[in-house]
Amino acid sequence: TNLLPVLKEQREYGSGIYIPKVFATGGTRIVYRGVMEDRVEAVAKKFATEHPMNEDFWSKHIKSVAIAQQMASEWNRLAIANKPVIFLEPTGYQRSGSPADDDVMIGEKVLVEPYVPGEFKKYNSNSGWVCDAIDGEEMLQAFSHWTYHKSNGTQLVCDIQGVRCRECYRLTNPVINSSLGDCGITDLGIEGINAFLYHHE
Image (cartoon, rainbow, N blue to C red; front, side, top):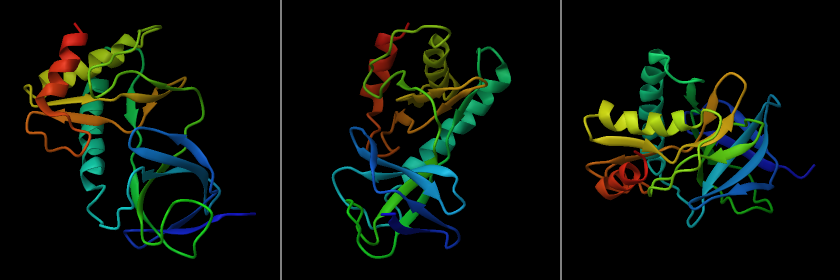
């Protein structure tokens, strides 16, 4: 089988094997779907327009996901939504091994997350777009709005996307628009916050 060589985790333990097939693409990421060494399905995400070799490249994104999950945990404890919200935790990996027929370079840093089966859907963006809510999905817009008030207007968790599972929403790649604009390259700052608030009452 034509497999992408082992990706060695930055924390120096564990490894993964990934099938070199593009699974999805977005504005800033290309996503490969494959399997871990223990055959658990996963996705590897690379940056779309460059090949980051610096270990700190993904650090703000990983931190943003942690903040989003912390807020989601508090939101879930309120028990006002139809389903709890869970953000998938990404792990930083570094490509090692010999070249393969894909666009991931030796030494490049990528993000790896569990693969979640089901219909993938985007619920809002970091620039103010909000989807038409159906079957309780308006609660995800309410969650984004709630994070703004929870943080006293300094942060808003948005770019909500993922899979609506039977027991919860499993979400990925959240963006934090912040008043300081310091939460990574997708943080649109105050303009992004105001755009969401304008489109969501």
